[in-house]
Image 1: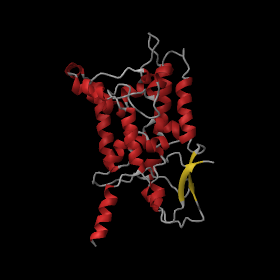
Image 2: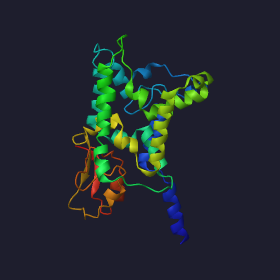
Image 3: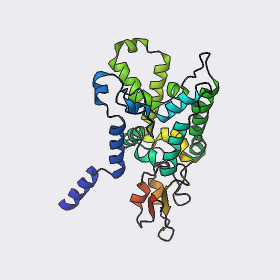
Image 4: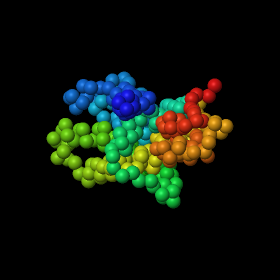
Length: 290
């Protein structure tokens, strides 16, 4: 009896591979400790390079640029620059990993995952709402990241970064709130826009306690971009139908609500590995194509 209790305690405190990778990537992408201490942004050479996940440029610890912010900046320069570098970089990660980037590397995904562990009632969004709502992230990508920066250009010839400015919760959490706390002058200048962004962040954080990864499911433009590559990326999930017994434990445990037995490489799959870990027969696997 005591041995069983000890085993349960060990399992409870064992950190999964997914969580280790999430923590390591969060530290790696935001490792400028002096920024948190002094409130100044890192301006070294690596800041000119994109990271593969949402990671606000204005976060004091950020060592690289956010790909969505960079894409908006390139598109919003009045058509003078085509974002070859940013799109090529994103396509490279999409072709190699697909949405494995979302499941293993995204710091804001980690925040949502941890919040979902809080013991509060969990909600299952009805399919009639969930299915159409998932297309919102594609609309966010096309409208806020591409169309508005490209066409709503000011007289100065530079467009506003609409997604970062009006919606991005990762920027508010990683940069906006910290700078407001650290800089009393900024607090005096805070207006409706900042309160709107904090409101968006608060709603998503509260929802994350009951609905798994609401931002990733419904609003993330980067997740929308990577989802296009899920079907043919080098990293693939695989369902061995000879081993599958149809118990659907994998589907009930999937944080993104993927119907694993129907489409294991669904655009919604973030390759977190949960389906693989709970499968009683080992029918689900994942890895790089040979």
